[in-house]
Amino acid sequence: MARLIGARALPALSIIACLSLTACAAPARLEGSDRAVALYREAQAQAKARAGARGGADRGSRGAAPRELSVDDAVALAKERSSTLAAASARESAARAHIAAASAGTYRNPELRVSQIRLDQYLDRVPRLSAGVRVRPPRPGEAGATADVARAEAAGVRAEGRIAELELEAEVRLLFDEVLLLDAELEALEAVAATRRRLADEQRALASARNGTALDEAMAALAAAVATEDSAEPRARREAVRAALLERVGIDPAAPVRLVGEPLGSAPLVALLPEEALIETALRSRPEIALAAAQLDAADAEGSIARGQRWPWLSFIEIGYEFSPATRDPLGWTLEAGLELPLFDTYSSAVEAAAADAVAAERTLAAEVQRIAREVRDRLRDVRAAATLVEEFKARALPAAERAGAEVARALDSRQIDVMEALDLDKRRADAQVKLLRLVRNYREALAELRTVVGGPIAAPGPAARR
Image 1 (cartoon, rainbow, N blue to C red):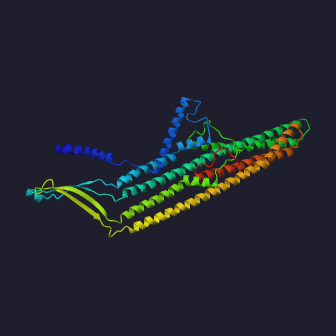
Image 2 (image 1 turned 30 degrees about the vertical axis):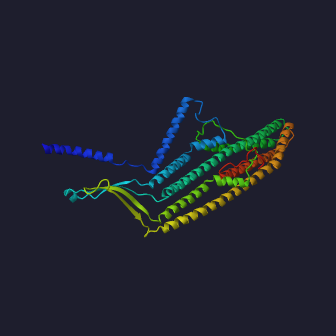
Image 3 (image 1 turned 90 degrees about the vertical axis):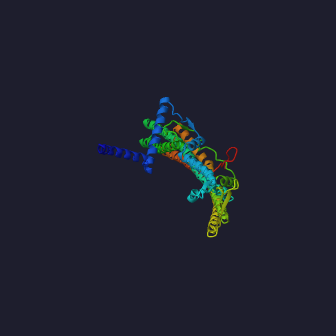
């Protein structure tokens, strides 16, 4: 009977053992690509849920999407909602936590030691027992130097986050400026198309009254159609750039958000700080300087640790008490200590390596200073050159283009104008507007590059001036 029960119970026990092993086993980890896809799907599901909740609450509103958006608001929202900056902030927090961990790690926990337990002594009824607490004291300055190394690493992580922040701000400002420039271009093209449509209407009326030719009418109609189609490409480009901007800001690209900003085509040029002030601002703000300085501090701290290890130091200190029949209480206290003697390893190679790292970090810092100063001067020259082109074009070409537009309008009002001449004059005026916008785009791009290399404010206080 017992054998029968055991034979029947064996499969059940096997199943229980398998389930136990399965429960104790570590769960299978997903591949990196599978995790990325799962995170993307989760983010999309959350976005749809938020959009549905907002739509249910107010069908005519986009929830958190503002009605108007300035460039400063766009930069602030992009920084607030950027997952890249959030990851950089988390890495910086982890690096700060490692500072305290590194400092505390130099102080090892004390060790309770019990020794000299012999069986024959217990059998002979003369037991002896020694108990003590052993500590391993750190070398002088070791805790501070270790914390300095961790602090330097945290500064490097902070500098990397600052680089990502500057790149994000430059990208958002460029996209915002591009949308405003495309708006100005579309406005200019719409004005050209309106003039050509009016010219086509005038030629159609003249042809109906037998005062014009069919060729003039066809040329005017073709020019009006081409002018209308010329705005299709900039309009599609504007929608793509606007969607990219709103996506980086964390707003639904379909949200009815109006971008608010001064028209760049007629906006005054930015009054810049002096060259020396820009260079000093860059040296204070650029994360590469902070990163190079952190590397130099880390090399100095590692050199301090290596130099301290060249000297003899206590490897441990132990204070205890010996319990035995022969001990006269309370005189059984004992003291032990160990001394590390750097005879075989004098740490000279570590000291030399730390000194070489310090020299390399110092030269890297000097090279970064020269490179950043050179970059600021180069970008400042680009901005000044682009500003000069914009000013000269506004001073020479724009008045002529405005006079041409006025003459075309006056001729259309008096119905005394040649079609080919009007089309040619109108084309030149449109080309002048497009060239101005191209020059302004180059100026704004140079200004954005200067703002990036400076890493801080570049405009002088007060109203905008010529340069």
